[in-house]
Every structure is written in C-alpha cells, then in structure tokens.
Image 1: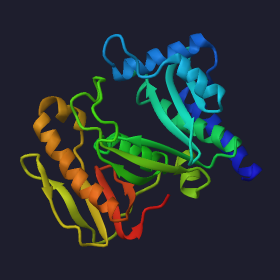
Image 2: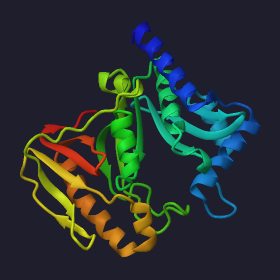
Image 3: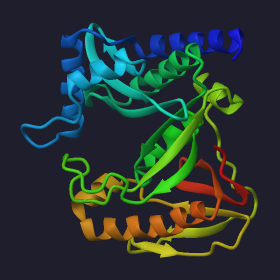
Length: 282
C-alpha cells in the first residue's frame, strides 16, 4: 500500500461527493443509525414489523471496524451503506439510495468513498453480491466501478421476504473489487471500463422475437450473454417469463463461470462478455 494510492483515493472520493452534492460520513450516533435502517427499509420494503438490518447490529459492525456510512444532501440522509470485515478484506453487505435521489451519482460517490476508507485501513479488496439479471446494476458494478465477477451463486439467500425480492429465487453474482487495480482507479476517476467483445464473439444467450430466452453457442473464445433490459418490470408483468430468463442465465452465465471462464465486462446494450480461455480474476 502506497501513500500515493491512498491520497489519490481520497481525492477521487472528494470529487465524486462534490459532483453529487453530498457529504458522506461514518455513522455512530444511534439516531443516525435508526435513520439509515429506515432508509434501507424504504428501499427494499420488508414485511410490516420487520427490518432488513437493526441499528444495534449496525452499531456493532461499525464499532468492530466495519464500514457504516451515510450520504447527506442538504443535511438529509439520501443513502446508506454497511460493510463487514471479511476474509477477503471488506464485504459490502447492503447499500441503498432513497427513491428521490437515484440517478444523481449517490451510489457511485458512496462506493468511491468506501474505496478510500478501505485503502486508508490497508484493505485492498471489497466484495459484494448483486442480482445478475438487473442490467443497470451489472453495468454499474463492472463498468462504472471496474469490479470483477468471481462466482455465480444460485439462490444464494434462499426465499426472501422484502417486496423487491419476494417470490423469486435469489441468484447472485459475487464480485471482487480490487482497489489498487488500474481498472478500478480509472473507473473511480470517471473513466468506466469498456467491455470489448472483439471481432468474432459467439452468442450464448439472446432474446427470441417473442421476448423469451434463446440458448445459443458456447464454443467461441468470447461468448456474449444477453439479459433483459428491465427485469424488474418483467417480474411484475410476466413472472413466468422472468423465471425462464433466470433459469437460462443461471445455466449459461453460471455454467460458463463454473467452468472457470472470466466475465470481462458488461455492455450498455445489456450483454455480459465472457472469455472462455481465461480464468476469472479474484
């Protein structure tokens, strides 16, 4: 760990927060922790009488060295994030942005802040999971942040009760965010990682004219796997079709990752780019 890297990370975190009009800070006061819990509950909407995470647990995580932070705009909390110390370094367990503040760079600024916070403490790897069928999250994680998919986890959490995840199988991709990697430094400086499928990729999964998934080839050096543009809308409008897509992505993308192929990027058009001859990086 070099002082130059830490200084650069702090500077980039400050720029990202400034551009989003935010103040980001660690949370310790019980009132702030309750506010963060309430914000996360508004995002995921768990059943009445339950909560995604309790303020007492947040307090313990932060006091024992974990990452518990809130993002404020004009003195109002608009985002929150909680990360646990883990074998790899830090596992970013949950992060959420209030509905009125999405699309304004809040999530990005919080991750860039989390990077600086981690590097200041000698942590060089952050991990987290995300739903592989949510296109905007895939692009955010791989392009905007430069994170690398490491493992496909079928139905990782089992049945979930919050409104966002209820009634669907909780497949997840685990990503590794290698904080000292030039790809990550560039992404945190506003230069996203551009996925390059090369001149002759094959299509492992595409959409049929009727909107259903169509399995293709997996025998090329580079394989493309499409996901729907708006899986959340599909899950609401046609749960059966959404389940078809989930199973197809699990089989194709999950199968390729299980074989050791590397997911090297995600395009704005909604394609995972997989290199079959290259092992996934950790």
